[in-house]
Image (cartoon, rainbow, N blue to C red; front, side, top):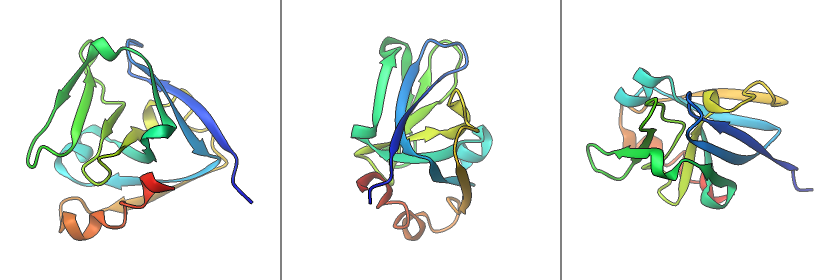
Length: 134
């Protein structure tokens, strides 16, 4: 039996950028301790590209890359909030910040898993690679 998926709306702080992400009722999110995630409090919902829709604000998005340049960190140019980005671990998908959903408590279950992004990233990333494929 296939788990029912729901489209959930979210966006940046000022509302210039709006999106939807399709998720099941129970999710697992990663709390990464790498330099950028720890500073921003990003809780990762990793999905394949087909489960993400940018509704508005493409013209308000600016991007930032560092280190390998593989991750495309996208921010609202108005308020500076990173609601989602293209993660290095899943370059064909998106990572959405749970905290940027309109109703982040609207899930049946949220399991927060610690992810050691400061340690051996390559070894750790293999655990995330499957997430955008389901």
